Image (cartoon, rainbow, N blue to C red):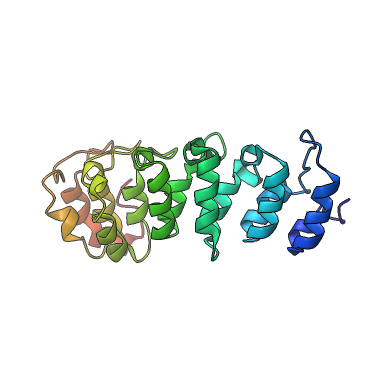
Length: 239
């Protein structure tokens, strides 16, 4: 049974109630319905950080990690977004059950991202480490804009410290010269949006300062026009 918005007992986090309900629903083909906004009990348990309630569901339903929530988010996406205490272990458990979750995308057909990108965009270094531990090649993925995790990290407000931390991971050197769908490398984005350019990128031998994007702009072109752009209020990457 559900309430007026379609929620079940999972939303409240009452583990004893969830356990009792699961004892009654030991049919492995039982369907766990979503509420009116597309959230399943499994998704809600993860999003809310109810580890014990999620474990009770997992003990009955053997393939729950396929079940998505809003915007095609899986429970793994929910865990990475929220980063509640204890959810890092849940991420580990999920990836032990099904590693391919790390490669599933969330979002719409034209605007999507991955769990690794989400962790980077939230500045969740511990989640990134957990994902890499189970899926060491997930760093190489791009989102619907063709952006790698370094592109995404640069767009953070306080990007400098986080980018410096990323460069302690060996793979980051391989991302410095990768262009997104608009031809922008991480250095292009730094030139457009970064008040301070981390030396780890600026002095990196792979950082090509004269690479053109699809607007025929190099990072140096963008940097030289940035003051003018800020005054005018336009975007230096499309000016």
